[in-house]
Amino acid sequence: MLASLTVLGTAATTGTAHADGCYTWNRALSQGASGEDVRQLQIRVAGYPGYGEVVAVDGQFGPATKAAVTRFQQAYGLSADGVAGTNTFNKLYALQDNDCTPVHFAYAEMNRCNSDWSGGAVSAASAKANALQQMWKLEALRHALGDRPLTTSSGFRSTACNNAVGGAANSNHLYGRGIDLVGSPSFCEIVKQARSHGFNEILGPGYPGHSDHAHLGTQSSRYWSASNCGI
Ligand code: ZN
Image: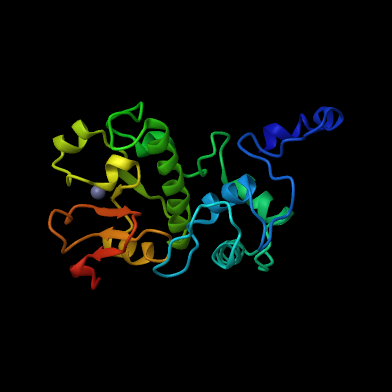
């Protein structure tokens, strides 16, 4: 971010210059690489897995990660070679805030009921980390829908919050992986496009209880249902 650039001159004399307040990559990453820097990259390109797929965030740069990086590069008009280098990292820096959320989404939008992330099905830290991953998928979805704003009505829920709204017993919302979207674009536009951005639990109009929002989640197996949208 621009605010960080002003300190680069002094930082360079003391060692690591951070290109971004959130995270700085220090090497180009290509297929075969592994490590935390790969995992950080995977979080940010997980919205580009291809239709019906989910990118594993495991720190191993395999063919699926290469394909996701390529699609990310294509989405932003970069040279698309599947190698994450300076241009790719600079785009990621531009797309994220200092708390590592993508620029068009914030933790508060993913946590409208319980602000400390506790009381769900996983630890608060895990719920928040899951929500971060989902926000990067939302950023990809938003971009694919023509950079139109997306509005959440629900994200992470504690058990109490989930019960209060009549959520399913083992809802992805309890893990920080469930997102409900309202407003525009239309629910059918959202659920159809979401199939290409790392969401494999997709519920919308035609599915019971989902006439007034689009639900997106990520889980171990695919479940899509929005019969009014042809899904
Ligand atoms: Zn939901």
